[in-house]
Image (cartoon, rainbow, N blue to C red; front, side):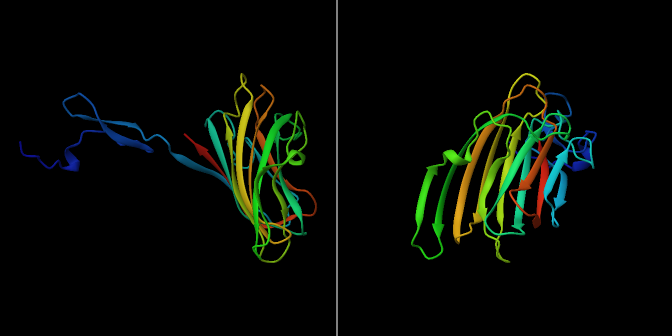
Length: 220
C-alpha cells in the first residue's frame, strides 16, 4: 500500500497554544492534545548587592500555587560580596510574611581541589542538615569570594499548594569553594506542613549576593 502525503491545510483541527496534534478515531483522524512535560518561565530575578531574593506568589508576576505541581529554580553564577559564605533557602506558608516553615533535610557533598591534593566524598554532613528546624537550609557551603568565583545549581519544589501532604524539595549545586575546591552538593528534604507553601527565599549567610540570576519555572 502506497503512503500518501497529507497537506497541512487539509487537517481539520483548531490550533490551540501549547498543545500538539494527535491521532484519533474520527474521520479527520486528528485532534489537539496536551503536549505534556512542558516548562514555562515564570520569573527571573537578577541579584545586585541583594541580601535576599524572594519569590512570592501573586507578587511581581510570580506564580507559586496550584497552577503547576512542580516548580524549578535555576541559580546561575551566584557571586558573594564576601569570601566563604553560604547560600541558603527557606520557605513561607504566609505569603512571605515569615520564612520559617519547619523542615527536615539531608546534605551530601564531594569536592576536589585545584592542586589535586584533596579529594573527598561523597560524604554526609550532619552539621548542614536540619531536623524539624525553621532555620534556612544550606544549598552552597563556603562559596569563594574571588572576582571569578561563583556557584550554580537548581532546586525542585513539588506540589507546594497541597493542603494534604508535606512539601518535598531536591537541590543540586556546584561551587568554587573558599579553599579553591570544586564542591558538589546534593540537598533534599521536606517542609513539614500541610499548609500551602507560597513563597521561597534565597539568602546569603553574611554580606550580599553581588551578582547572578535565579529563575523560576513551572513544570506541567
